[in-house]
Image 1: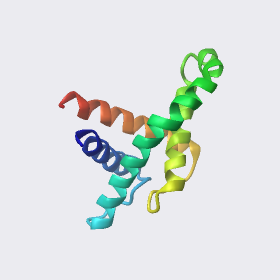
Image 2: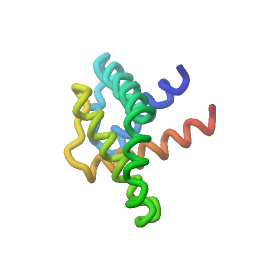
Image 3: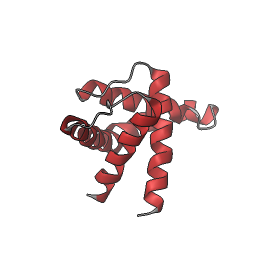
Image 4: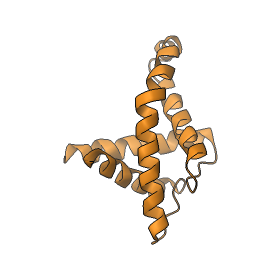
Length: 112
């Protein structure tokens, strides 16, 4: 439960910083959308992402791990397609969103 709460706060903060993702308004819908995005990202990161990471291992080795940013961006775009109210306009913005989300989650998990 704590993981989803931290991920939800991370999604809200990343949306606020990057100005994409969940529209930040003081409404019930914003919180519900952020929780849904957190749940969908948790499911994607635990099921699909390991398979994609394994398949793209040679490219990841050649790029010294930088291709993992692209994989994270694609996972964010997949969440964009699955959750209504969560919009990411491009792969570049998805990569930016995933980097900001990772830093925020790392920071929040430090206090856990």
